[in-house]
Image 1 (cartoon, rainbow, N blue to C red):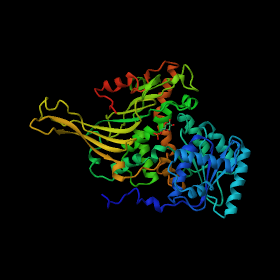
Image 2 (image 1 turned 120 degrees about the vertical axis):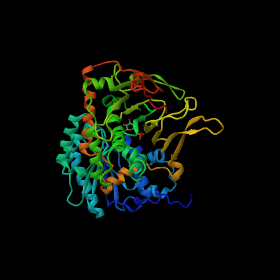
Image 3 (image 1 turned 135 degrees about the horizontal axis):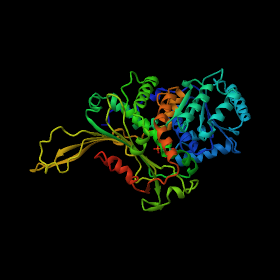
Image 4 (image 1 turned 180 degrees about the vertical axis):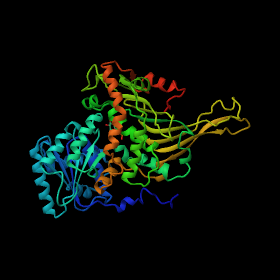
Amino acid sequence: MADTPNPLRDSMRLKRTPQPGTLIILGATGDLTKRKLVPSLYSLYTQGLLPPDFRIVAFARRDKDDDIFRNDMQEALQKYHGDIEDKSSLKRFLSLIHYHRGDFNQPEPHVTLSEYLSKQEKERGIPGNRIFYLSTPPSTYQAIVNNMLLAGLQRNDSGWTRVIIEKPFGRDLKTAVELSAVVENAWEEDQVYRIDHYLGKETVQNILVFRFANGIFEPIWNRRYIDHVQITVAETLGVEGRGNFFEETGITRDIVQNHALQLFCLFAMEPPAAFDSSAVRDEKVKVLQAVKPFREHDVDNLVVRGQYVGGSLMGQYLPGYKEEEGVARDSTTETYLAAKFFIDNWRWADVPFYIRAGKRLPKRVTEIAIQFKNAPLQMFSEKARSQVGSNVLALRIQPDEGISLKFDSKVPGPSSLIRPVTMDFRYGTSFGQKAPDAYERLLLDALLGDSTLFTRSDENQMAWKILDPFFERWSQQGKVDLPGYPIGTWGPPEADQLAARDFREWRRL
Ligand code: BG6
Protein backbone atom coordinates (compact mmCIF):
# COMPACT_ATOMS: atom_id res chain seq x y z
CA MET A 1 0.00 0.00 0.00
CA ALA A 2 2.87 2.35 0.83
CA ASP A 3 3.86 2.68 -2.84
CA THR A 4 0.37 3.39 -4.11
CA PRO A 5 0.23 6.98 -5.36
CA ASN A 6 -2.14 9.05 -3.33
CA PRO A 7 -4.32 11.05 -5.71
CA LEU A 8 -5.25 13.50 -2.97
CA ARG A 9 -1.60 14.32 -2.30
CA ASP A 10 -0.40 14.14 -5.86
CA SER A 11 -3.34 16.17 -6.99
CA MET A 12 -3.35 18.23 -10.16
CA ARG A 13 -4.46 21.00 -7.87
CA LEU A 14 -0.87 21.61 -6.90
CA LYS A 15 -0.32 22.95 -10.38
CA ARG A 16 -3.28 25.28 -10.28
CA THR A 17 -2.39 28.67 -8.84
CA PRO A 18 -4.72 31.61 -9.39
CA GLN A 19 -3.61 34.94 -10.79
CA PRO A 20 -2.69 37.72 -8.34
CA GLY A 21 -5.72 39.57 -7.07
CA THR A 22 -7.90 40.63 -4.16
CA LEU A 23 -10.71 38.80 -2.42
CA ILE A 24 -13.16 41.21 -0.86
CA ILE A 25 -15.47 39.73 1.80
CA LEU A 26 -18.63 41.76 2.32
CA GLY A 27 -20.07 41.17 5.76
CA ALA A 28 -16.69 39.93 6.96
CA THR A 29 -17.43 40.14 10.68
CA GLY A 30 -20.04 37.37 10.36
CA ASP A 31 -19.64 33.76 11.40
CA LEU A 32 -18.86 32.37 7.96
CA THR A 33 -15.60 34.33 7.67
CA LYS A 34 -14.35 33.01 11.00
CA ARG A 35 -15.54 29.45 10.70
CA LYS A 36 -14.98 28.73 7.04
CA LEU A 37 -13.55 31.41 4.77
CA VAL A 38 -10.41 32.45 6.63
CA PRO A 39 -9.50 28.90 7.78
CA SER A 40 -9.90 27.70 4.17
CA LEU A 41 -7.84 30.58 2.80
CA TYR A 42 -5.16 29.84 5.36
CA SER A 43 -5.05 26.18 4.26
CA LEU A 44 -4.70 27.25 0.64
CA TYR A 45 -1.95 29.65 1.67
CA THR A 46 0.05 27.03 3.54
CA GLN A 47 -0.20 24.67 0.56
CA GLY A 48 1.19 27.40 -1.71
CA LEU A 49 -2.07 27.55 -3.65
CA LEU A 50 -2.60 31.28 -3.30
CA PRO A 51 -0.65 33.57 -5.63
CA PRO A 52 2.22 35.64 -4.16
CA ASP A 53 0.40 38.91 -4.66
CA PHE A 54 -2.87 38.14 -2.98
CA ARG A 55 -4.83 40.27 -0.55
CA ILE A 56 -7.99 39.78 1.47
CA VAL A 57 -10.06 42.86 2.18
CA ALA A 58 -12.69 42.50 4.88
CA PHE A 59 -15.53 44.96 4.37
CA ALA A 60 -17.99 45.35 7.25
CA ARG A 61 -19.81 47.85 9.43
CA ARG A 62 -18.13 47.30 12.78
CA ASP A 63 -15.54 49.70 14.08
CA LYS A 64 -12.28 47.82 13.58
CA ASP A 65 -8.93 48.35 11.92
CA ASP A 66 -6.37 46.02 10.29
CA ASP A 67 -4.76 45.05 13.60
CA ILE A 68 -7.97 44.35 15.47
CA PHE A 69 -9.40 42.33 12.61
CA ARG A 70 -6.17 40.36 12.16
CA ASN A 71 -6.28 39.57 15.85
CA ASP A 72 -9.85 38.32 15.51
CA MET A 73 -8.80 36.13 12.60
CA GLN A 74 -5.85 34.74 14.53
CA GLU A 75 -8.23 33.66 17.29
CA ALA A 76 -10.63 32.24 14.72
CA LEU A 77 -7.83 30.25 13.11
CA GLN A 78 -6.78 28.82 16.43
CA LYS A 79 -10.36 27.81 17.13
CA TYR A 80 -11.55 26.57 13.75
CA HIS A 81 -8.40 25.53 11.94
CA GLY A 82 -6.35 24.00 14.72
CA ASP A 83 -2.82 22.63 14.14
CA ILE A 84 -1.06 25.94 13.44
CA GLU A 85 2.53 24.94 14.01
CA ASP A 86 4.30 27.42 11.81
CA LYS A 87 3.87 30.76 13.58
CA SER A 88 5.82 32.68 10.94
CA SER A 89 3.56 31.50 8.13
CA LEU A 90 0.56 32.48 10.24
CA LYS A 91 2.02 35.95 10.64
CA ARG A 92 2.67 36.29 6.92
CA PHE A 93 -0.84 35.11 6.16
CA LEU A 94 -2.43 37.57 8.59
CA SER A 95 -0.48 40.40 7.00
CA LEU A 96 -2.42 39.76 3.75
CA ILE A 97 -5.67 40.73 5.49
CA HIS A 98 -6.95 44.31 5.57
CA TYR A 99 -10.07 45.80 7.09
CA HIS A 100 -12.18 48.39 5.32
CA ARG A 101 -14.99 49.78 7.43
CA GLY A 102 -18.32 50.68 5.84
CA ASP A 103 -22.05 50.02 5.74
CA PHE A 104 -22.59 47.90 2.65
CA ASN A 105 -26.26 48.95 2.60
CA GLN A 106 -25.19 52.51 1.73
CA PRO A 107 -23.77 53.59 -1.65
CA GLU A 108 -20.95 55.81 -0.32
CA PRO A 109 -18.80 53.11 1.38
CA HIS A 110 -18.70 51.23 -1.94
CA VAL A 111 -17.13 54.31 -3.53
CA THR A 112 -14.45 54.50 -0.84
CA LEU A 113 -13.92 50.74 -1.19
CA SER A 114 -13.37 51.20 -4.92
CA GLU A 115 -10.81 53.95 -4.29
CA TYR A 116 -9.11 51.83 -1.63
CA LEU A 117 -8.81 48.84 -3.96
CA SER A 118 -7.43 50.91 -6.85
CA LYS A 119 -4.87 52.54 -4.55
CA GLN A 120 -3.71 49.17 -3.19
CA GLU A 121 -3.44 47.65 -6.66
CA LYS A 122 -1.45 50.63 -7.92
CA GLU A 123 0.94 50.60 -4.97
CA ARG A 124 1.55 46.88 -5.35
CA GLY A 125 1.70 47.01 -9.14
CA ILE A 126 -0.69 44.10 -9.56
CA PRO A 127 -3.64 43.65 -11.92
CA GLY A 128 -7.06 44.64 -10.66
CA ASN A 129 -8.38 41.08 -10.45
CA ARG A 130 -11.15 41.22 -7.86
CA ILE A 131 -13.46 38.65 -6.42
CA PHE A 132 -16.27 39.82 -4.15
CA TYR A 133 -17.76 37.41 -1.63
CA LEU A 134 -21.31 38.33 -0.54
CA SER A 135 -21.40 36.90 2.96
CA THR A 136 -24.26 39.11 4.09
CA PRO A 137 -27.91 38.32 4.86
CA PRO A 138 -29.71 37.38 1.59
CA SER A 139 -32.13 40.29 2.10
CA THR A 140 -29.22 42.69 1.44
CA TYR A 141 -28.12 41.22 -1.91
CA GLN A 142 -30.15 43.48 -4.20
CA ALA A 143 -29.10 46.67 -2.41
CA ILE A 144 -25.45 45.62 -2.41
CA VAL A 145 -25.40 44.81 -6.12
CA ASN A 146 -27.04 48.16 -6.89
CA ASN A 147 -24.56 49.99 -4.67
CA MET A 148 -21.65 48.21 -6.34
CA LEU A 149 -23.04 49.29 -9.71
CA LEU A 150 -23.29 52.90 -8.56
CA ALA A 151 -19.68 52.79 -7.39
CA GLY A 152 -18.55 51.17 -10.66
CA LEU A 153 -17.34 48.09 -8.80
CA GLN A 154 -19.05 45.70 -11.21
CA ARG A 155 -16.06 45.83 -13.53
CA ASN A 156 -12.52 46.96 -13.62
CA ASP A 157 -10.39 47.90 -16.62
CA SER A 158 -7.18 46.43 -15.25
CA GLY A 159 -8.37 42.88 -14.43
CA TRP A 160 -11.33 40.54 -14.07
CA THR A 161 -14.20 40.89 -11.61
CA ARG A 162 -16.12 37.95 -10.14
CA VAL A 163 -18.73 37.64 -7.44
CA ILE A 164 -19.49 34.74 -5.11
CA ILE A 165 -23.00 34.70 -3.69
CA GLU A 166 -23.99 32.61 -0.68
CA LYS A 167 -27.21 30.60 -0.65
CA PRO A 168 -30.17 30.95 -0.43
CA PHE A 169 -30.39 32.66 -3.79
CA GLY A 170 -34.04 33.80 -3.63
CA ARG A 171 -36.79 32.32 -1.47
CA ASP A 172 -39.01 31.02 -4.29
CA LEU A 173 -39.03 31.11 -8.08
CA LYS A 174 -40.32 34.69 -8.29
CA THR A 175 -37.72 36.19 -5.96
CA ALA A 176 -34.94 34.11 -7.55
CA VAL A 177 -35.87 35.49 -10.98
CA GLU A 178 -35.97 39.05 -9.58
CA LEU A 179 -32.58 38.65 -7.93
CA SER A 180 -31.13 37.13 -11.10
CA ALA A 181 -32.30 40.15 -13.07
CA VAL A 182 -30.49 42.49 -10.66
CA VAL A 183 -27.32 40.37 -10.73
CA GLU A 184 -27.41 39.99 -14.52
CA ASN A 185 -27.69 43.73 -14.85
CA ALA A 186 -24.25 43.97 -13.23
CA TRP A 187 -22.43 40.83 -14.39
CA GLU A 188 -22.33 38.17 -17.06
CA GLU A 189 -23.34 34.68 -15.88
CA ASP A 190 -19.71 33.48 -16.09
CA GLN A 191 -18.71 36.10 -13.50
CA VAL A 192 -21.28 34.89 -10.96
CA TYR A 193 -20.47 32.01 -8.57
CA ARG A 194 -23.55 30.87 -6.61
CA ILE A 195 -22.09 28.80 -3.85
CA ASP A 196 -23.57 25.60 -2.44
CA HIS A 197 -20.85 24.24 -0.21
CA TYR A 198 -22.05 20.65 -0.64
CA LEU A 199 -20.56 20.69 -4.13
CA GLY A 200 -17.15 21.37 -2.59
CA LYS A 201 -17.26 18.20 -0.50
CA GLU A 202 -14.94 15.49 -1.81
CA THR A 203 -17.57 12.81 -1.34
CA VAL A 204 -20.11 14.78 -3.35
CA GLN A 205 -17.65 15.20 -6.23
CA ASN A 206 -16.91 11.51 -5.93
CA ILE A 207 -20.50 10.72 -6.96
CA LEU A 208 -19.48 11.74 -10.48
CA VAL A 209 -16.19 9.86 -10.33
CA PHE A 210 -17.89 6.75 -8.97
CA ARG A 211 -20.50 6.83 -11.71
CA PHE A 212 -18.45 7.94 -14.69
CA ALA A 213 -14.89 6.71 -14.08
CA ASN A 214 -16.08 3.12 -13.54
CA GLY A 215 -17.70 0.96 -16.15
CA ILE A 216 -19.55 -1.45 -13.89
CA PHE A 217 -22.19 0.80 -12.36
CA GLU A 218 -23.67 2.55 -15.37
CA PRO A 219 -25.54 -0.52 -16.73
CA ILE A 220 -27.44 -0.95 -13.45
CA TRP A 221 -28.00 2.75 -12.76
CA ASN A 222 -31.62 2.82 -13.89
CA ARG A 223 -35.21 1.78 -13.36
CA ARG A 224 -34.57 -1.78 -14.47
CA TYR A 225 -32.35 -2.58 -11.47
CA ILE A 226 -33.07 0.10 -8.90
CA ASP A 227 -36.15 -0.23 -6.69
CA HIS A 228 -35.87 3.16 -5.03
CA VAL A 229 -33.41 5.74 -3.76
CA GLN A 230 -33.24 7.42 -0.34
CA ILE A 231 -31.42 10.69 0.19
CA THR A 232 -30.90 11.69 3.81
CA VAL A 233 -29.48 14.95 5.14
CA ALA A 234 -29.77 14.59 8.90
CA GLU A 235 -28.31 16.91 11.50
CA THR A 236 -28.19 16.78 15.27
CA LEU A 237 -27.80 20.55 15.33
CA GLY A 238 -30.76 22.79 15.92
CA VAL A 239 -30.92 26.36 14.66
CA GLU A 240 -27.75 27.37 16.54
CA GLY A 241 -28.77 30.89 17.50
CA ARG A 242 -30.06 31.54 13.97
CA GLY A 243 -33.74 31.39 14.92
CA ASN A 244 -34.60 34.57 12.99
CA PHE A 245 -32.89 33.26 9.87
CA PHE A 246 -34.48 29.83 10.14
CA GLU A 247 -37.97 31.25 10.64
CA GLU A 248 -37.61 32.76 7.16
CA THR A 249 -36.17 29.67 5.51
CA GLY A 250 -37.25 26.42 7.14
CA ILE A 251 -35.49 23.19 6.20
CA THR A 252 -36.94 23.21 2.67
CA ARG A 253 -35.23 26.46 1.70
CA ASP A 254 -32.17 25.90 3.89
CA ILE A 255 -31.27 22.35 2.87
CA VAL A 256 -33.64 20.74 0.38
CA GLN A 257 -33.64 23.42 -2.34
CA ASN A 258 -29.87 23.34 -2.53
CA HIS A 259 -27.88 20.59 -0.78
CA ALA A 260 -30.40 17.75 -1.14
CA LEU A 261 -31.39 18.59 -4.71
CA GLN A 262 -27.72 18.87 -5.70
CA LEU A 263 -27.11 15.32 -4.42
CA PHE A 264 -30.23 14.22 -6.30
CA CYS A 265 -29.00 15.80 -9.57
CA LEU A 266 -25.50 14.35 -9.38
CA PHE A 267 -26.94 10.94 -8.62
CA ALA A 268 -29.56 10.97 -11.38
CA MET A 269 -28.01 12.98 -14.23
CA GLU A 270 -26.98 11.53 -17.58
CA PRO A 271 -23.25 11.28 -18.33
CA PRO A 272 -22.11 14.76 -19.43
CA ALA A 273 -20.33 15.07 -22.79
CA ALA A 274 -17.30 16.55 -21.00
CA PHE A 275 -16.25 17.35 -17.46
CA ASP A 276 -16.64 21.07 -17.83
CA SER A 277 -18.90 23.66 -16.31
CA SER A 278 -21.46 23.86 -19.12
CA ALA A 279 -21.78 20.15 -19.84
CA VAL A 280 -22.09 19.14 -16.17
CA ARG A 281 -24.57 21.86 -15.33
CA ASP A 282 -26.63 21.25 -18.50
CA GLU A 283 -27.18 17.66 -17.40
CA LYS A 284 -28.12 18.68 -13.86
CA VAL A 285 -30.70 21.11 -15.20
CA LYS A 286 -32.20 18.35 -17.36
CA VAL A 287 -32.81 16.21 -14.27
CA LEU A 288 -34.58 19.07 -12.51
CA GLN A 289 -36.65 19.77 -15.62
CA ALA A 290 -37.79 16.15 -15.68
CA VAL A 291 -38.96 16.07 -12.05
CA LYS A 292 -42.66 15.27 -11.98
CA PRO A 293 -44.41 18.46 -10.87
CA PHE A 294 -46.22 18.32 -7.52
CA ARG A 295 -49.91 19.13 -7.82
CA GLU A 296 -51.89 20.39 -4.84
CA HIS A 297 -52.93 16.93 -3.67
CA ASP A 298 -49.40 15.59 -4.26
CA VAL A 299 -48.12 18.07 -1.70
CA ASP A 300 -50.71 16.71 0.74
CA ASN A 301 -49.89 13.08 -0.02
CA LEU A 302 -46.20 12.97 -0.88
CA VAL A 303 -44.73 15.64 1.37
CA VAL A 304 -44.43 15.57 5.17
CA ARG A 305 -43.43 18.54 7.29
CA GLY A 306 -42.39 18.30 10.91
CA GLN A 307 -41.12 20.45 13.75
CA TYR A 308 -38.97 19.32 16.66
CA VAL A 309 -40.29 19.44 20.19
CA GLY A 310 -38.23 19.30 23.40
CA GLY A 311 -36.42 16.05 24.08
CA SER A 312 -33.06 14.58 24.85
CA LEU A 313 -30.13 14.12 22.59
CA MET A 314 -27.00 12.36 23.78
CA GLY A 315 -28.21 12.50 27.35
CA GLN A 316 -29.00 16.20 27.35
CA TYR A 317 -32.47 17.76 27.43
CA LEU A 318 -32.89 20.35 24.68
CA PRO A 319 -35.74 22.81 24.09
CA GLY A 320 -38.16 22.47 21.19
CA TYR A 321 -38.07 24.68 18.10
CA LYS A 322 -40.80 27.02 19.32
CA GLU A 323 -38.76 27.69 22.47
CA GLU A 324 -35.63 28.70 20.53
CA GLU A 325 -34.55 32.33 20.55
CA GLY A 326 -35.89 34.33 17.60
CA VAL A 327 -38.64 31.79 16.89
CA ALA A 328 -42.36 32.65 17.11
CA ARG A 329 -44.19 30.72 19.83
CA ASP A 330 -46.80 29.70 17.25
CA SER A 331 -44.28 29.13 14.45
CA THR A 332 -45.26 26.88 11.53
CA THR A 333 -41.74 26.70 10.12
CA GLU A 334 -40.69 23.16 9.25
CA THR A 335 -37.48 21.77 10.75
CA TYR A 336 -38.04 18.43 9.01
CA LEU A 337 -39.16 17.55 5.52
CA ALA A 338 -39.67 14.21 3.82
CA ALA A 339 -40.94 13.95 0.27
CA LYS A 340 -41.26 11.47 -2.54
CA PHE A 341 -40.01 12.68 -5.91
CA PHE A 342 -40.22 11.10 -9.36
CA ILE A 343 -38.21 11.85 -12.47
CA ASP A 344 -40.18 11.51 -15.66
CA ASN A 345 -37.50 10.28 -18.04
CA TRP A 346 -36.58 6.93 -19.56
CA ARG A 347 -33.89 6.18 -17.00
CA TRP A 348 -35.96 6.87 -13.88
CA ALA A 349 -39.66 6.57 -14.71
CA ASP A 350 -41.55 5.18 -11.67
CA VAL A 351 -38.50 4.97 -9.41
CA PRO A 352 -39.34 6.81 -6.18
CA PHE A 353 -36.71 9.13 -4.70
CA TYR A 354 -37.43 9.58 -1.00
CA ILE A 355 -35.67 12.66 0.30
CA ARG A 356 -35.57 13.60 3.99
CA ALA A 357 -33.80 16.42 5.78
CA GLY A 358 -34.10 17.49 9.36
CA LYS A 359 -32.63 19.28 12.35
CA ARG A 360 -32.21 17.70 15.79
CA LEU A 361 -32.36 14.15 14.48
CA PRO A 362 -30.52 11.39 16.37
CA LYS A 363 -27.40 11.46 14.19
CA ARG A 364 -25.48 13.67 11.81
CA VAL A 365 -25.49 11.75 8.58
CA THR A 366 -25.75 12.57 4.90
CA GLU A 367 -26.03 9.76 2.41
CA ILE A 368 -27.57 8.50 -0.79
CA ALA A 369 -28.77 4.91 -0.52
CA ILE A 370 -29.73 2.94 -3.59
CA GLN A 371 -31.91 -0.07 -2.97
CA PHE A 372 -31.77 -2.57 -5.79
CA LYS A 373 -34.59 -4.85 -6.90
CA ASN A 374 -34.63 -8.35 -5.49
CA ALA A 375 -33.41 -11.36 -7.41
CA PRO A 376 -36.13 -12.43 -9.86
CA LEU A 377 -36.47 -15.90 -8.41
CA GLN A 378 -35.66 -17.27 -4.97
CA MET A 379 -34.28 -20.77 -4.90
CA PHE A 380 -33.36 -20.74 -1.19
CA SER A 381 -35.81 -21.86 1.46
CA GLU A 382 -37.85 -19.39 3.51
CA LYS A 383 -35.99 -20.52 6.62
CA ALA A 384 -32.55 -19.96 5.10
CA ARG A 385 -33.61 -16.57 3.89
CA SER A 386 -35.16 -15.36 7.15
CA GLN A 387 -32.57 -12.59 7.45
CA VAL A 388 -32.16 -11.74 3.80
CA GLY A 389 -32.19 -8.07 2.88
CA SER A 390 -32.15 -6.20 -0.38
CA ASN A 391 -28.90 -5.13 -2.00
CA VAL A 392 -28.14 -1.59 -0.94
CA LEU A 393 -25.38 0.64 -2.21
CA ALA A 394 -24.81 3.53 0.18
CA LEU A 395 -22.82 6.59 -0.85
CA ARG A 396 -21.88 8.03 2.53
CA ILE A 397 -21.28 11.74 2.14
CA GLN A 398 -20.55 12.46 5.81
CA PRO A 399 -19.39 12.06 8.50
CA ASP A 400 -18.21 8.48 7.96
CA GLU A 401 -17.14 9.16 4.36
CA GLY A 402 -17.18 6.12 2.14
CA ILE A 403 -19.21 3.72 0.03
CA SER A 404 -20.68 0.41 1.09
CA LEU A 405 -22.50 -2.38 -0.65
CA LYS A 406 -24.78 -4.70 1.22
CA PHE A 407 -25.41 -8.14 -0.22
CA ASP A 408 -26.41 -11.58 1.04
CA SER A 409 -23.91 -14.22 1.92
CA LYS A 410 -23.93 -17.78 3.19
CA VAL A 411 -23.24 -18.14 6.91
CA PRO A 412 -20.21 -20.45 7.28
CA GLY A 413 -20.98 -23.94 8.52
CA PRO A 414 -23.12 -26.91 7.65
CA SER A 415 -26.43 -25.00 7.61
CA SER A 416 -27.52 -23.03 4.58
CA LEU A 417 -28.39 -19.86 6.44
CA ILE A 418 -28.10 -16.58 4.57
CA ARG A 419 -27.21 -13.22 6.14
CA PRO A 420 -26.57 -9.75 4.76
CA VAL A 421 -22.91 -8.60 4.81
CA THR A 422 -21.25 -5.35 3.82
CA MET A 423 -18.35 -4.47 1.57
CA ASP A 424 -16.91 -1.20 2.67
CA PHE A 425 -14.69 1.54 1.25
CA ARG A 426 -13.58 4.27 3.66
CA TYR A 427 -11.89 7.43 2.52
CA GLY A 428 -9.84 7.79 5.67
CA THR A 429 -8.38 4.29 5.42
CA SER A 430 -7.77 4.26 1.68
CA PHE A 431 -6.22 7.68 1.31
CA GLY A 432 -4.84 8.21 4.79
CA GLN A 433 -5.63 11.87 4.67
CA LYS A 434 -8.41 14.12 5.87
CA ALA A 435 -10.43 15.64 3.05
CA PRO A 436 -10.08 19.42 2.76
CA ASP A 437 -12.98 21.61 3.80
CA ALA A 438 -15.51 22.20 1.03
CA TYR A 439 -14.88 25.96 1.08
CA GLU A 440 -11.21 25.42 0.36
CA ARG A 441 -11.93 23.77 -2.94
CA LEU A 442 -14.68 26.21 -3.89
CA LEU A 443 -12.68 29.34 -3.08
CA LEU A 444 -9.79 28.02 -5.12
CA ASP A 445 -12.05 27.17 -8.07
CA ALA A 446 -13.65 30.61 -8.00
CA LEU A 447 -10.21 32.26 -7.92
CA LEU A 448 -9.22 30.10 -10.88
CA GLY A 449 -12.42 30.95 -12.77
CA ASP A 450 -13.78 27.39 -12.78
CA SER A 451 -17.52 27.43 -12.15
CA THR A 452 -18.25 23.69 -12.58
CA LEU A 453 -18.97 23.27 -8.86
CA PHE A 454 -21.18 26.35 -8.59
CA THR A 455 -24.90 26.62 -9.27
CA ARG A 456 -26.02 28.20 -12.51
CA SER A 457 -28.97 30.57 -12.59
CA ASP A 458 -31.29 28.21 -14.54
CA GLU A 459 -30.40 25.35 -12.19
CA ASN A 460 -31.23 27.44 -9.14
CA GLN A 461 -34.52 28.56 -10.67
CA MET A 462 -35.54 25.03 -11.69
CA ALA A 463 -34.98 23.89 -8.10
CA TRP A 464 -37.29 26.64 -6.87
CA LYS A 465 -39.85 25.74 -9.54
CA ILE A 466 -40.03 22.18 -8.18
CA LEU A 467 -40.58 23.38 -4.62
CA ASP A 468 -42.87 26.34 -5.28
CA PRO A 469 -46.02 24.14 -5.10
CA PHE A 470 -44.98 23.18 -1.54
CA PHE A 471 -44.87 26.81 -0.46
CA GLU A 472 -48.12 27.64 -2.25
CA ARG A 473 -50.01 24.76 -0.65
CA TRP A 474 -48.62 25.52 2.80
CA SER A 475 -49.59 29.13 2.49
CA GLN A 476 -53.16 28.09 1.51
CA GLN A 477 -53.27 25.90 4.60
CA GLY A 478 -52.30 28.85 6.79
CA LYS A 479 -51.27 28.41 10.40
CA VAL A 480 -51.55 24.70 11.09
CA ASP A 481 -49.81 22.84 13.84
CA LEU A 482 -47.07 20.80 12.20
CA PRO A 483 -46.56 17.19 13.20
CA GLY A 484 -44.08 17.23 16.07
CA TYR A 485 -41.13 14.94 16.59
CA PRO A 486 -39.21 14.78 19.84
CA ILE A 487 -35.58 15.84 19.57
CA GLY A 488 -33.40 12.80 18.94
CA THR A 489 -35.99 10.89 16.90
CA TRP A 490 -36.15 10.30 13.14
CA GLY A 491 -38.94 12.77 12.33
CA PRO A 492 -42.71 12.56 12.73
CA PRO A 493 -44.63 9.25 12.33
CA GLU A 494 -46.20 10.69 9.17
CA ALA A 495 -42.78 10.38 7.49
CA ASP A 496 -42.67 6.66 8.29
CA GLN A 497 -46.12 6.29 6.83
CA LEU A 498 -44.97 7.96 3.60
CA ALA A 499 -42.57 5.05 3.04
CA ALA A 500 -44.80 2.40 4.66
CA ARG A 501 -47.64 3.15 2.22
CA ASP A 502 -45.29 1.85 -0.49
CA PHE A 503 -44.30 -1.17 1.66
CA ARG A 504 -40.89 0.37 2.21
CA GLU A 505 -39.12 1.85 5.20
CA TRP A 506 -36.54 4.52 5.83
CA ARG A 507 -33.08 3.26 6.44
CA ARG A 508 -32.12 2.99 10.09
CA LEU A 509 -28.92 4.94 10.29
C1 BG6 B 1 -25.92 25.17 5.70
C2 BG6 B 1 -27.23 25.37 6.41
O1 BG6 B 1 -26.03 25.49 4.35
O2 BG6 B 1 -25.54 23.81 5.83
C3 BG6 B 1 -27.14 24.95 7.87
O3 BG6 B 1 -27.59 26.75 6.34
C4 BG6 B 1 -26.61 23.53 7.97
O4 BG6 B 1 -28.42 25.03 8.48
C5 BG6 B 1 -25.34 23.37 7.15
O5 BG6 B 1 -26.37 23.24 9.34
C6 BG6 B 1 -24.91 21.93 7.10
O6 BG6 B 1 -23.65 21.85 6.47
P1 BG6 B 1 -22.70 20.60 6.73
O7 BG6 B 1 -21.54 20.83 5.82
O8 BG6 B 1 -22.33 20.63 8.18
O9 BG6 B 1 -23.50 19.40 6.37
